[in-house]
Image (tube, rainbow, N blue to C red; front, side):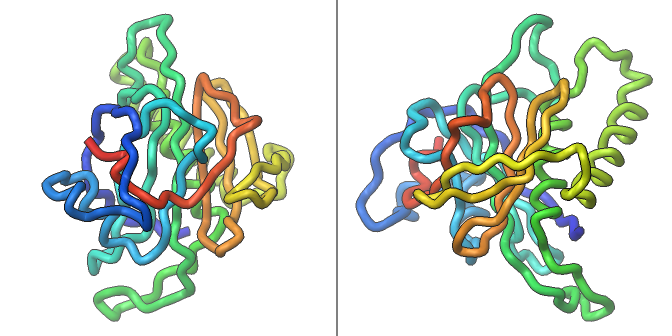
Length: 228
């Protein structure tokens, strides 16, 4: 599975605002550093469908060495902090949708090697590592956190490479009105799922405090709903 660099910043949540018909208006996102990478992507972004009426926010995009946008995430619900810094007893309710470009095996930007094709496992890995980054135990001693995160990240990688294994079940959810089977698993930190949209784009998602059952996904026609 390919890994890429990450750009962009966490933004405060904002209630969705109606945008113009026909898609995103770049002028409405001008000056928003978190949106810049999303506007450069050559694939559609996905989020929760219109049944979700809560706050929406942009997370980060991942880029290849040549700056090509490869993946990114959109958030829904309460914005969780990184590294689990919420007060003890509080649990933000959120779902993050990960969109991954469907890429074939290709040459690296510097021409010295090849990059692996993206796959459903890529989406599962990005979702699993994303969940860990936002839910690690805040009561853990600092000296143990690095070891814990390294161990859990390695486990998430192994699970993403074994989507047919016993850790995963199948959960069918609508994507633009079409039921799509997703690989799904739960842990004490939240849930993760991964699959492929009807148009071929790879989808992952993770969340906590919000059940995955009953969610629906759709192409984002207007990114201003996620802007500051």
